[in-house]
Image 1 (cartoon, one colour):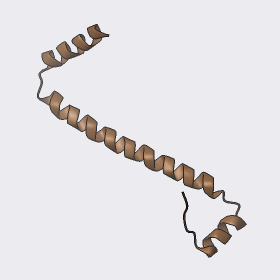
Image 2: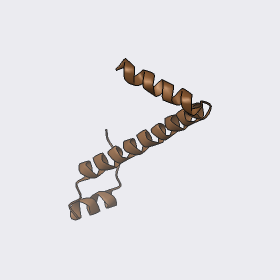
Image 3: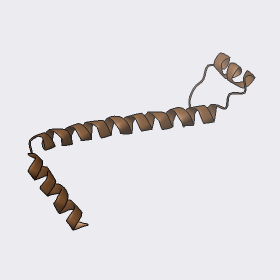
Image 4: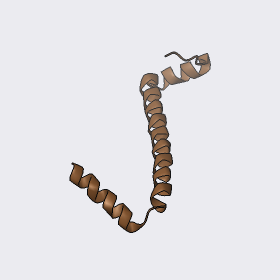
Length: 70
């Protein structure tokens, strides 16, 4: 992966000893974590909608079936 960095910024990064690779890696990892969390929130909301349609006894029965299957 490559990125064009203006010379002035590149000079400042070098002057202050900023390790660009480490910074970029950390930012990319954070962006992926945030995207995964947003995806998980959407999936949970979808499950919440489905579970809202079921009664407490149906939910308990499904949980019991799942536990017994393991």
